[in-house]
Length: 362
Image (cartoon, rainbow, N blue to C red; front, side):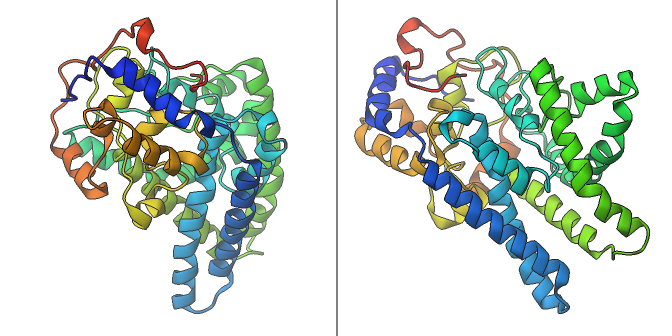
């Protein structure tokens, strides 16, 4: 069970914000460098895995492709916390380089992820990225097994369902409501604004133009199925790694009502250990409790912010309770931990402990 945060947390929040207040501005150069280098290398590794004749080369290229596509796709999380004008052109570039190939236009995540930070929805059935998984091994296995199903479902959704839904209104409503969001909670119901609907249609058109020619050539026998098999294997592996990472990001023991800012922090986990953590939780995602404390911190400042907080806050600060002991230990605790009887501590946030003005918008 999550321990209540100490009564001095309000002062700690203010002290924490003072320690990192200069780190909220994103550096566009870091974002563009990440996209160009990681995105370009991901495409090269994938094409090498498709073209190589040696099984050993295919295996090596595929393993590299999984690591690189995972990192490149993870950047969609940054898009949700960055306004387009902060890094002009970056949202479009990411969608063209990564989102189309990954059947993940950012509109499927940008309009959804905010509910994972809201006090009224975090940890509830309306949270797109939370499930009561603690102590439920069967549910965890099913959650991981879905990684093998999402790729084919996404292909059918975009290549068949999307154009058909344009002339079948009930199907369109179903797709918008239940098949236009990148979530782990498959019961999540999406309510799109008119602008989001227009953006979704535009990216559906781009995906149809990009995907149908190679798929049609494959169906007709002009292209080998090998490229699609490599794509499916890469896609499924990336989803599986990401889902394992998410299991180590929260305690997943909440079962009920709204959870305030500090309650979200108490339910989240930082895993700051070394290069290994950077592989399975890249772009600052291993600092997940820190992210829930200050969601607008850019990925390239997460490590620096974490070090400042650990070094600058007193030993009895609530912040030190967020540290996990590694991926395997976090997974072990998840599988053996009973679910909470109560949703979370600090369910009503007094004015004194609300987020600082320069802290993340929810």
